[in-house]
Length: 102
Image (tube, rainbow, N blue to C red):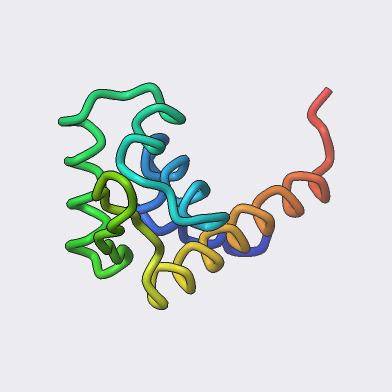
């Protein structure tokens, strides 16, 4: 049997997986992330800090009608998340190749 791919523990957590997916497709603000994920400010802040401390997250202030912060995956975060997605795909492909137990 082939060795299973390793999953990045930074992304292999439900909220951070969902945050990473939102960051993968855009540059959401804190309030957009909070609304999309339906989590508290403190919970979101804790997960963003973890992603930031891993070097996976960039943030910047946008000065529109009302200043707000937007977030995006850093270059290393983008690479790590794509690697994570590839590992998930590999696991699913392996599962498809395995015979079903009867």
